[in-house]
Image (cartoon, rainbow, N blue to C red; front, top):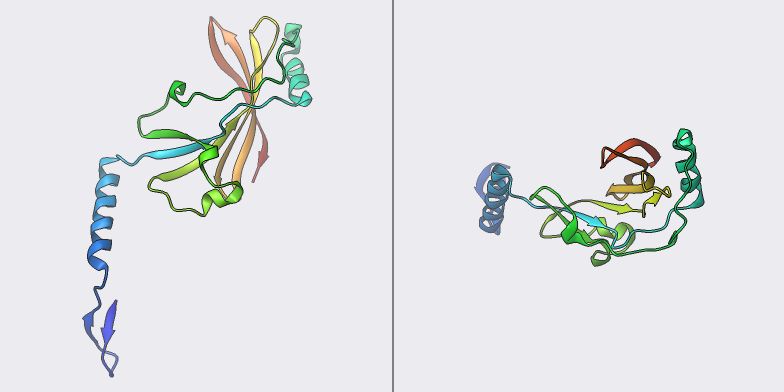
Amino acid sequence: MPIFNEKGEIIGTDTTGMGQKLKEFEQRKAELKENSIKLVVAIRDSVYPLETKEICLLVKHFAKQSLKLDSTDLNVKYKIDLKKLKTDEKLKFKYLSGFPKGSDIWKKEYDFHLSGTTHLSRIQFDSTKSFGILKSGIGCGKLCGAEFRVFIRKDNGKWVIDEIKMTHVS
């Protein structure tokens, strides 16, 4: 900060704490240059069951297929194993339960960049496990986010996204 004399002229600079701030700034700048900053996404710990509406939409979306739904374990929830999620090395998932609740997640300072939150429903399959639907959501701030309905189908033994429909946005 500048130091002024009685005439309003700058006669010096107050550098209290500037050395440490400058060091932190240079370190952060170097990390950005190397693109080595880890981005963290907080993910809901477990998948959750779908609502009846999504189950009906699965049948409607793939109406030409004469689907019969897999009705086993419709309400099963299970914990997501973070080690099994494949991602870029610069992206890391952490369980949402390890963060402050609600919008307080965005108020806290972290030693990493919290780039967002996400959640996934369980997948509702048809009885042949050839078609499915799930819900997913993302959050990017206190009043920033979206939710999607994702229709999937098996094509030559691989799962592909048939369509994504946005259901909510803020």
